[in-house]
Image 1 (spheres, helix red, strand yellow):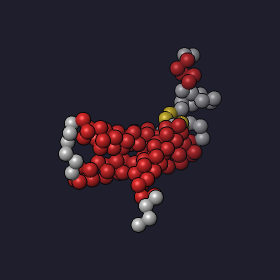
Image 2 (tube, one colour; image 1 turned 180 degrees about the horizontal axis):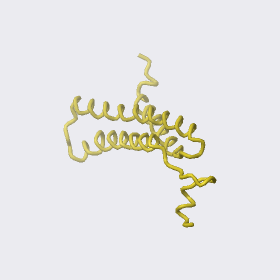
Image 3 (cartoon, rainbow, N blue to C red; image 1 turned 60 degrees about the horizontal axis):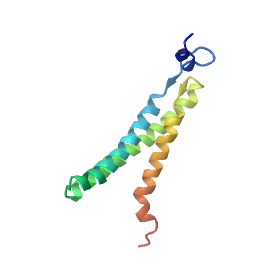
Image 4 (spheres, rainbow, N blue to C red; image 1 turned 120 degrees about the horizontal axis):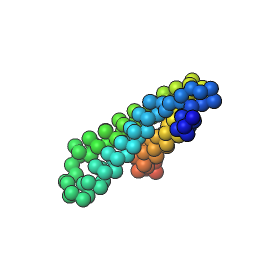
Amino acid sequence: MKIREIIFKDRNGQKIKTSKWARVSFYCAVLGWLILLFWGFILKEILQIPQDNNSNLIVAIASIGLMAFALLTGIVGIVEINRGKGTVNGLGRIVVSLLAVFLFLFFMFLPYLGHRG
């Protein structure tokens, strides 16, 4: 038996697969951060693109939409892993994506937390 076969099989010999919801959640969270950071901050400063409200709104809506989708797919992935009883893994990816979502929400709403209007 090869080492690769041992790593991807459980005790009963069943193949362990990574949850597709875990992968989707992880990639959406990473893509949401990349859109926000690279397009929202880095590219506009490097390329000296004038910042108008429409482009900022599009970046914010795209990032928030991806983060909301990452949150929903992360929750679905946790349920799938819980029901899989050891045949589905990917909990680490879900935890990372949910942490990314909550950090995103914290930084997006940080200016409003201390504001008493």
